[in-house]
Length: 312
Image (cartoon, rainbow, N blue to C red):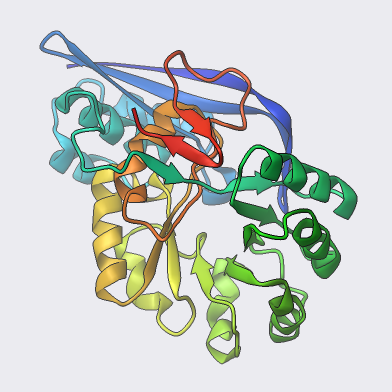
């Protein structure tokens, strides 16, 4: 078994801004595993929010280079996170012909198109652009400022689209219940991670007509029991679970506990988006537009059309 890892930089089509900062490029780590004349490719995005750096993730990958392992052993060798994700998905790719199309997938999967934080006018313009391209599901990034104004502008620009909100833990200084009541008339389908993971217990006391989705508060199946009474949905990201193998475990745990499933992504190429398609096939919400947001996707990347990923 031969393992090679490299940092790849992608240019974004436009600046991408969330509550924690703004980016013009997306850096990822791509891992290639060669074995018995075959090669599998995986990709991950180290995330500072989870204590990861490119150096730490590359070091984790290096730590297993001299070992021979399969997906079941990988979970013992590395913790959940970006490094294990890239290796796990490379093994899936290595083991499966035309991964992931050996799974039962529909001919297309609707995905959210993401509007990043800007002035209400600029956010409305971005949403309108997506609508004109056929998008029917729009994800609105927000911080704790001008929540209603920004959402109102996007709703006006996308009157017939389903809107979901991602606060990335930024509503810590807001009255959550009052904010939900204010935005509810805008017909918001879901609010993702309004409060920091360490302080989200107060959600149990919030009366909300809009379901909450756990992102930063839910990484693996082990986290699901602690979400009861706070969230009605979990956002499964392979970079959090540590790959597709653990993503299936989280999906099952969430459904067993009566929670709906969303699948999300970090910014990256079609390598990362493809790996999540088996989870996306049965998710109530899909947010896999990471490859759509970059201007230099891989050759033979996914096809995005009318707000959907077209499955070839």
